[in-house]
Amino acid sequence: AQSVTQLDSQVPVFEEAPVELRCNYSSSVSVYLFWYVQYPNQGLQLLLKYLSGSTLVKGINGFEAEFNKSQTSFHLRKPSVHISDTAEYFCAVSDTPQGGSEKLVFGKGTKLTVNP
Amino acid sequence: GAGVSQSPRYKVAKRGQDVALRCDPISGHVSLFWYQQALGQGPEFLTYFQNEAQLDKSGLPSDRFFAERPEGSVSTLKIQRTQQEDSAVYLCASSLALTGGEQFFGPGTRLTVL
Image 1 (cartoon, chains in turn cyan, red):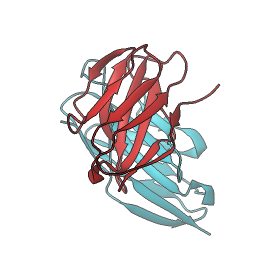
Image 2 (tube, rainbow over the protein chains, first blue to last red):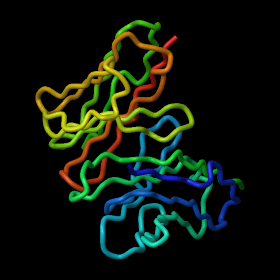
Image 3 (cartoon, each protein chain N blue to C red):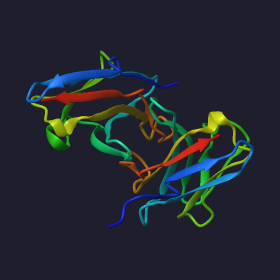
Image 4 (cartoon, chains in turn green, brown):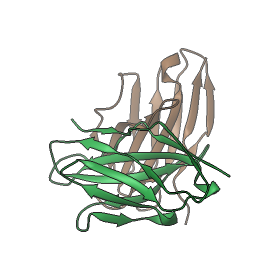
């Protein structure tokens, strides 16, 4: 069975500082990887996804993530955060078409708080 | 165009009542998913439709939970005889592609069972 571990439940940072949100997954099959952001009282919005190809993926709002198969990681990074980046971030995994279901398996989330 | 919409946005039910939660996916989206998000947790998969066919219901926690999508568009998640542990946000998502497609999420329905 697949699982996703987000190592940090809360990450406080100062505005304009860099940030890394960590994500590790376990799966016995090939996977797709996703990062979603959730603002208060809103649904989830896709930041970026890895399906295949280049292991460095760029997303919206200046975020990027790197897929590392040997370490089974997909860490999210941003070089300089803004107050508006304050939100909860979820890492998720799904099977590739050959692997089975398209359902997403989510981590427990990391609450990013950007302070002035 | 309009995104995924869900109604009601908030629902308060007394324990033992039945509830029905509605999801309107993005027009033309083939796949539809339901997730349950407990307070402070990530969303957890409940069930998946491809058009009107329910292909995976492995995440439904009990036989009190039932979902349908009779015409391959709007979906309803029904919970019978609600219990306090059913209190959560129920998220609906739809996607266009059959595989690897981005899932677009609705705002969710927050269910509180008293």
